[in-house]
Image (cartoon, rainbow, N blue to C red; front, side, top):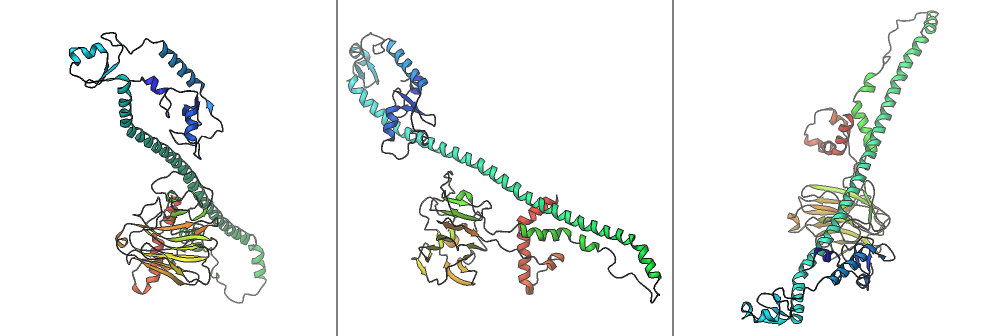
Length: 469
């Protein structure tokens, strides 16, 4: 059995002591001839162990490893031969099939091996070596799988750290904008009060002159304090938080769908606010289970299992795009057609595609600038329309088992450098409703929906609450 030192001095490819050892950029070492043979016929010069690409143009000699191998081989040559029988000092020429050990001719004739079968060493060794290699092969494949998984996990860990730093930076940037807005708003309010105070002082300074002028005029009638002479405190302080919040809505738009960067194809570039996507240079991202390998596609971050949901996508500048809905239960690593309902634009024509029916060519006279998607999970319906003309484009009716499936995610695909962008949604505010107790009047359903949309808008509520604290 080989010693641990001998195992460490063996090339991972030929499994023999290193000959002319060289080191790759990933720090793994091989025989020079072995690694060159491994690369022959391959496009990428990758490591046979960790699969990382060798970044240098030449192979750097590993002199330390070379010296260790030479010392080890020299030490082996100087050791006494171990091919002699320990009992009879005869050369080991036979292999006992029953005891599975080398023996000499004296051992063969002894009582211990009287009924055993034997094979010459030179015949038994290749057979057993082959058998052992066959037994070892599954373990080698398993080890390679583990090594690949480790490399992938290392990449994911690095990517998570990068995402954490990026997310932290974005949060600080957004809150900095809000803090700046509030500081400017506070300064404007204080300036107004200062001007009001300055107005009073100016009035008192001119009081004497004004009083003398009035004394020179005949008193025609009794004078009273005119209406509105006092500072209108309520105008400046009434509903101050609410009025500032209304202004904040304009600087913090609400987007109904946010893109999931963890699902984005490596060839897609997402905007900082995760509301638009465009085709760009391929990025080095981990192949996590959520990521879509279907060309230039990405999903929304939130899936819907029930209810009615709507979002609009600006598509006007792209020449090759798809917009639709994707079932959570479908795989994401190959062609994802079985769980996908979408409108597809390519080659100047529009198509409606779904898992169950043949492709439908859509007769479109004027190119679409925006696409509205309405997903009704309760009725099992997906409706596409043109919000600019308020006309229906196409409707899909979900069939079993998709009507009972899990969540369905907004789906986007863009093979153009011009971005697809998810439009911001207006969040209507009914002031009268917010000032009074909310009442559930059937005749005022539209206003009720406005208030409910506002109350559900957690983004503004949470941000405003944090800033007030």
